[in-house]
Image (tube, rainbow, N blue to C red; front, side):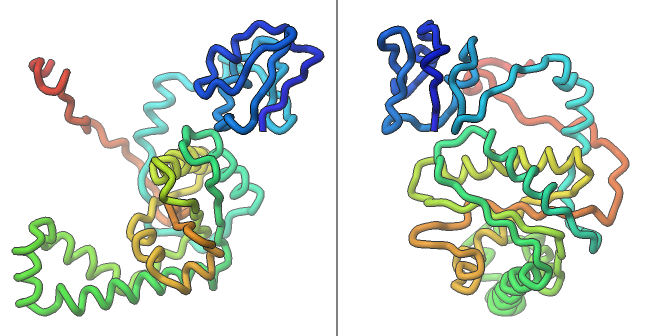
Length: 277
C-alpha cells in the first residue's frame, strides 16, 4: 500500500494530479490516500519531488541517468535475446531466481493480485513436462498420425499444416529440462490479466539475460497444464486461479553468436491511409 510521510509532505499536489484513480487528495497541507480506490500503480511514489510517498514504507531512490543503457547497448540486448530450448543441468541459485522474479513487479499491470510459483525441483519439473508430453503424444496419435483424420483436420482448420505436425511430432518425447519454471498465476476474469502476466515475464526475461540465464516462454505448457488437475494441485492453484504465463529458465547448452539483422515489424501509418516510407 502507499504510505505518506505527512510530517514531510509540502502539499504540492503533484501526486494528486498524476493519480488516475483520484485516490489522492491534499488536505490541510498534506497528501492523503484513500486506499480503497488505489490500484497500486505507484505513479505518485515516482513523481513526488520530496520522496515522502513510499510503497509499504520502503522509501524510493532517485533515478540515476548515468546508469541508463545507451541505444547501442539496447540494440545488443534485444538482438542477443533468443528463446533457449536446450539447457544444461546446472541449477540456478535461488537468490538469483528470486531477484529475477522480483523485477516482474515493475511491469505495467491491470491485475495487482498476480502471484508467482517457482518450480526448481528436478522431479517436479520432469513431472510437469511429462504431463505435456503425454498430451502431445495423444494429440499426435489421434489427429496427426492417421492420414484420413489429418487430411480432414487440415480442411476444417487451415492453420494446421505440416509445420504444426512436425513440431508436435518432435515434442512427443523431448524433455526441455530447464533449471526452473516460473508460473505467473491469477484470476483470468480480471481484465488484461494475461497481458499483465506477459509484461511481467518480459522484464524477468531481460534480467535473466543480463545474468547469463537463458529463457523461453512456454505457451503450449500454459494451455495444457491449465487443463490438468495434477498440475493444478502441484502448483497450488485455488478457486478461479489459472496459469497466465510460464517462463522456463536455465543456462543455455548452446551459444548464440550472431545478431540477426534486417528483421522489421510491418507498419501501417494511420490505418494504411498514408503510403509507407
